[in-house]
Length: 294
Image (cartoon, rainbow, N blue to C red):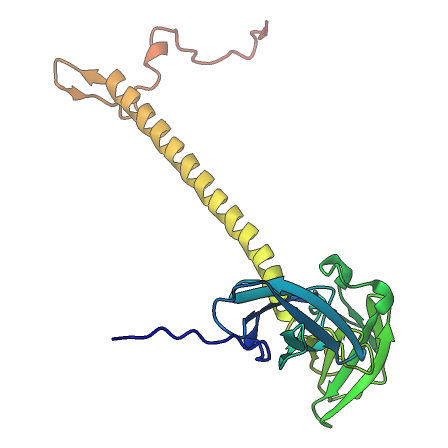
């Protein structure tokens, strides 16, 4: 024997298993389950988003009959902090959670140029890769002195460079550049950090060494290529000379070959003038005979 029992839905229960599926710079995807399984009618939810930085609230209404509900909260700010509350429209018990959006990324290509009495920090504009960043927001620069174990705020700028003076000899510094923090330093961008060994050396462990390796490769590769080309040309020239000498010797040997004797006959050098043997020999000139040159 068995009996079927149907529970009376309780609309005073809170949504279940509220969690964030994905969080971006300006949006967050959240998901939750209905207060009870298999609702038989549309359920109206109230999604309240409290901005913990700006101290503002927004409420969104979501209607669904599904047991699992997914909703995307839009128009958030990078690096923001939010408190999300989900409950039924009749103000039943609530479920809540906190969300931190992804901050703006760090500026690219942070470099150091050493001058006589100061250094210059350079970086690429963050607006090139961040559509949510406006140059009017600017950047802020921090410096960490490892010898003194002190972090200092150097200032902010809307340019893509910053001048740093009054550095001490023998001190090692770390410089960081990030999108300027908003609302009391609570909404900041990711920092780009660069190490600077000491004043006067101009060394940069994170940026200079890769550049030096690239410069060395740019010099070594062409030199090796030229050496290979030179060796190849030399081998070709030697091969051609060897073939030419071999062909000359073969032609010379064939011209002196005697089929009767079955061997080549070479002169010893005494009969080099055989072609002129029939010419009369000139023995001398008399003193009283004029010599006429035609």
